[in-house]
Image (cartoon, rainbow over all chains, first blue to last red; front, side, top):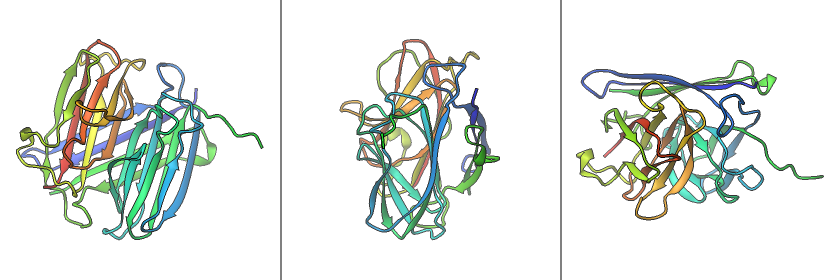
Length: 138
Length: 148
């Protein structure tokens, strides 16, 4: 079985006692306990101010699956950021140095994950772990 | 006052992925190097119906302060199973952004043990919504860090 794991350690001293959460999950195919995700796409792009891209296209993906997405804004200028959208709905902003890790159900062919650079030329790395897609014949 | 999150990704799907990926971020206010100063605190909620519920309501007085609509905010959510030690990888909770009174935009499915960390906006009606796939008990643990 292909094995993909995602671990997080979250710490904060905002509370009166320190918060520390550590957990790991093994990324499985939808609804299974024995089959790990088997395919992945990874990349690096630069997105300049005002540019809007669908960084991950749901069109050819199998729908309603257990895909996982990692996106990081590798920019170092703290004023740089991108807005992240799912199906054109803004969910939040990734500032320089920020990363996100989410499940992506791709519940419809238009549930693309998009980015819009709001300031600066943002350096974005991303990885999609998934169950497969319909490949385009050449 | 700092909040940090470190992710470690590893996979043997692609040999060139090597030993994986490790990244730490310090959560800061929008466009600055100033640390986020507000949090909901760490919370736990048991759900036992397929009804959509607001896990975090941006306009809710329970936050004591209003989230900034143009600020930075991050949410962590984990599906920890039934809360009694059983973690079911075959059932899930759909996490969406929006208002349960409308049509929240699904993000994805948190199967048993799965977690997410994502940015959110502080906009009213951009709540974090959870919808279990079954009527079986499932427990979510979550926290939001934000600015006002």
